[in-house]
Image 1 (cartoon, rainbow, N blue to C red):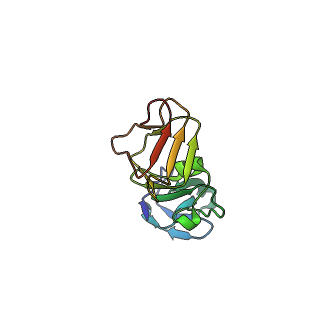
Image 2 (cartoon, rainbow, N blue to C red; image 1 turned 90 degrees about the vertical axis):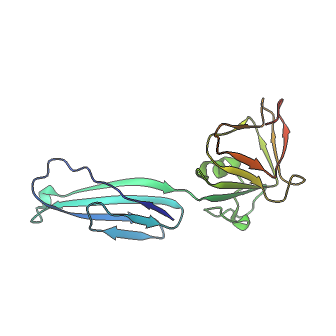
Image 3 (cartoon, one colour; image 1 turned 60 degrees about the vertical axis):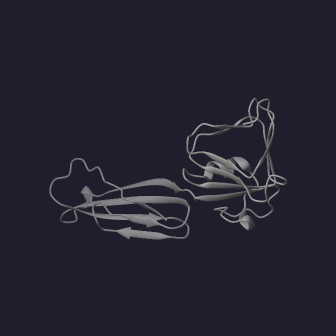
Length: 173
């Protein structure tokens, strides 16, 4: 899971205050009354973060609520050519996503993007994240094709490509 500790920025508050943090998604809700709590989120997805601050004595004129949104991305994403039943967070071959751009957006630094089948890209795949892009079935089956100048450009020293056939482009990798 992902742990994070939000820090409130409070202006114009005299005296003490109480805090009520709420982090929630479609499937999970967490609350805390600490000023700077730590939340551990297990499931990837979109979350809402709400903070209600109330001045000491319960003065409702000194109460404020702020809501923010953030995303917890999966560490492993599967792409499958012609996937029929993609299900977020796309973390198994059975729930694989069929849209490569979606798969690429979801993967985080240190994660792995698994490719099953063929991916045809209109331009170079620039890998700016420290991720591994790997074929599941081996080079005879899993392939990245591109009509751009390069097929894949490794623009991060932590990037790794393995188990993929790479075709097209004018210079390969």
